[in-house]
Image 1 (cartoon, rainbow, N blue to C red):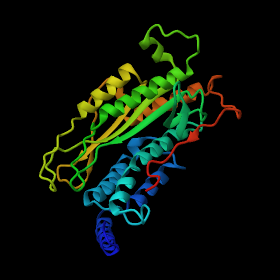
Image 2: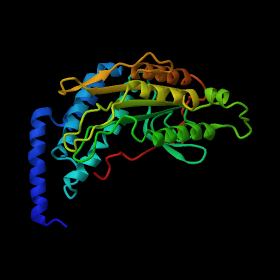
Image 3: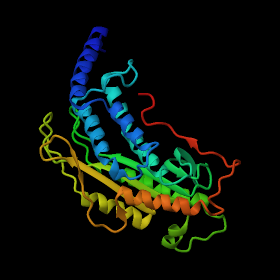
Image 4: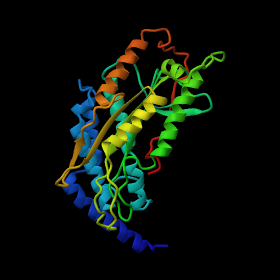
Length: 314
């Protein structure tokens, strides 16, 4: 076990490195607040309008990961720098979900429940964006994911589809369980494809992914595998073809100079679209269903409870 003097020395070095990183790329909290403020209370409703700021935020955050230190002032001081960095880094998923909810909110007057606990057939599910904002009989559910990460210390670069098998199972189960939860008791499912295409809630997958570069990790000299955008679109399309109602994707990679991130264009793939197109479609569906009896929200409806932030307990 490290002595108090050793712990203080570790903290001193971490702060020194974090200060140097901040001088070069800034502080992620500052960049995040500026990004979300640019959307809230403005007319911005397209992800493409803020994609450059998102990439800058990811570059800033990943710079700290590669330096293996947390940004200044984040997390509980009692925790080690490694633990604070790990917990803080997970918060990028909440940033993405909150950003998309804010952009979607600009296209509808309906209240969207963020990180809501929604009732399924066998269990409750934490949904990143749900409408209407009630625990039962939700009509729209959007699940968001941010995948991929640069190397950190002895940990190699994490690809965009690393552990995707488990993520895919989670998405499939949630989509099915949520639809079954709203099924009338006597409703017969004669054909799966036909039933799921009209059953509610409509479920969507909104994916942000950093593509692995396939470069050598300077800390371990190990070569990482390279991600291909076609792999991601193929995986997303498979979900749309079998379990969910739509998918939107935004991907990025290290530029040739290694000085910033750049967007990776999507190939022409049926049923997998840009985030802009997917958000526009979801907003259109919300606005359409809000005019129906099903879409009316009553004060007696159980309100969807808020889930836990990923960085809780940092």
